Image (cartoon, rainbow, N blue to C red; front, side, top):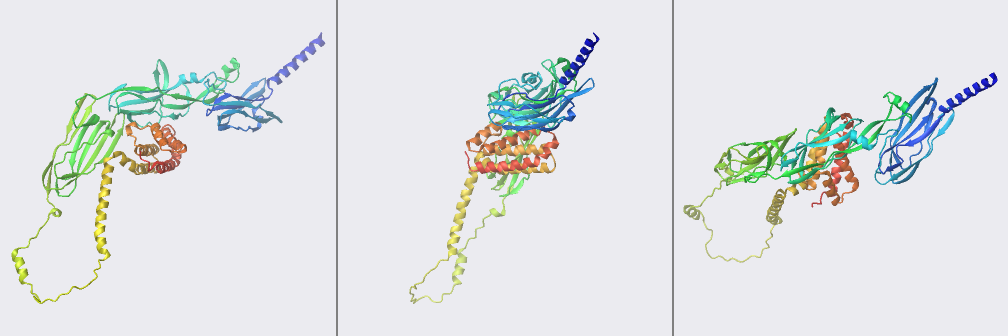
Length: 610
């Protein structure tokens, strides 16, 4: 009986040793969060070694990832467990991949060395389909899918009013709501504001989260973008969604055992991974009503609350001496769209095209001033009076038209020396005296014969006749072209687009030298968008990147240059979300790329006015 019991005891201990060895058997496996992916989608592949002390793992040999682009990796994570004094653990090496083309691909075997042996994983087949497959994108070992993530992270667009008058300011705010841990979001697509003139408020330089209730639930909320919109046409207008790619950090489950999952759910032991969530805001609908009837004749579309000031730099002048009439319109509203009021001048005054200066304050309420300088030249002498300058705007608060008038100006114009014409006559006495002063040598018996002479007219004589005529014709043609240019605002902007872009680029370079990162990216954006507005004849109130892209395509601008334009626009917008140090490092490269793109655009469409 004892012998039987002894043998049973030996068998029992042998079984325990076998089971212990089985528990800690080494395995090297491969897995992916998806085996069917869309072209351009990102997915994760993990190579995991389990069993034994992970410190003994050496010489990891990754496979070739033919047909895929490696976005990140290898990213290493490890875990350990101790049972009866035996140390066991696992080591994962993960890659974030992106397919290049459609088709079926095989990721080959990876291998590691442990305890003097080599361990290899099995090949992994991945199918790449066109577009993004409509399936739940799950984090590996996690029950959280894209739909569940979308409930925890989303964007909300809010407008301070859903109905407005033509030209009245509407403030749109974009907020990011989250219950999850997220990294820095990246812009996927900017909203378009067709039918509006837009002015970004801020811009927001740093994202700060606060707690806020939304539909009965508590979220961390951050304001990520705010823009002032001024409708330029009536009817039902739409603001398209603002789209972001938000990296969401989620936990991976350790094993399939609920007991171990609950224990290892602690943040000290938990492993995490980043899942990219594509989220977009809601579409906003704005109803725009026309302004009330009965507008005065001097109304040019100004909506808001304004004041006007007028002054002249001198009131005593001589003929042909210029002076300046300055108008200063200030206040809040659609100030950038204001048309300059036209002063009524008395007869004998000549007025030139005005010079305009704008100062815009981008607060919650867009305000500022527009200064218009008129150069005036009096051509005739006398006491002249410039009538009051009239400016009319519509006040949406009072729902009334308001007429503002400046004071009149009296100008004393004296006759200048250059305008006097002195005519000297000759009297009969002068003629008589002249006749007596002449003494003739001979008065009769002339024997005159015609002499054959060759009269040669020198070349300078013809030049003196032709040059003034040609100069007059040239001046006439130049004046006519200038009149056509100033009479056609679009043509003038088309021809001066590159010049204006160079001015903005100089401001951007100055901001770059002073390490003013936010101002630098703002000026770069203004340089590129301002160039496209002028060169493509797009009104500022109707400009969108999509509309500019359509016009560039119609002018046969190649896809590579179009992509570079979009990349600059996206980087300028992303600069508001990224750390200042990171964007400062990329600023020099950004400046050079913008200069090259504008030069190439001008070379491609420079002479193609449509």
